View 1 (spheres, rainbow, N blue to C red):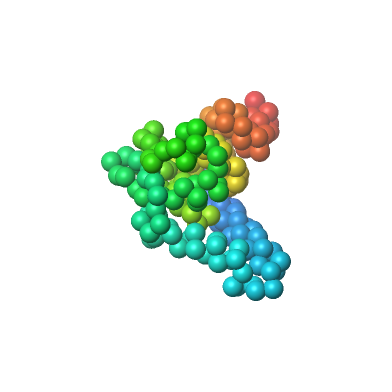
View 2 (cartoon, rainbow, N blue to C red):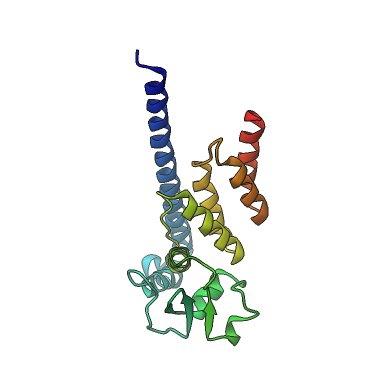
Length: 200
């Protein structure tokens, strides 16, 4: 049998692998939910893949190029760091009514200067495609959850909460609890609260 330090190291590596697997399973679960939603929407129309809902979802997703929304049909912009990214009012309005301005119809640009560029890019990608990668960095996921809460993007906030639950440890649970409580992430807050009450 190895030394206690070696055993602890093995257990920490195993826990890290389990966390990664948990986050990947959450991503897969989310993808299946998206497919289910599209299938349900399509089944309500006898046209299937050619239905209005399916075509609209595909069209909006295609407006998002590899890294940013396309300029095609663009009618506004988002100021993100040093870049001015073209966007589409109807896509933003379909996701939320809370973009930091009284009405999207009255502005030609949104200023997201307070967001880290990577977080702003992830918000835009999710708005258009319903996809976001949360596999590697819990600090990024926490920032993204804050942004989602600020823009009233409930589904994105929930996805971040689920991903962060896999990263909660004794060391970070108080910080995560505080943030979750501030922004109303009830599931994450309760999870952290359970861990706090168990260890203190």
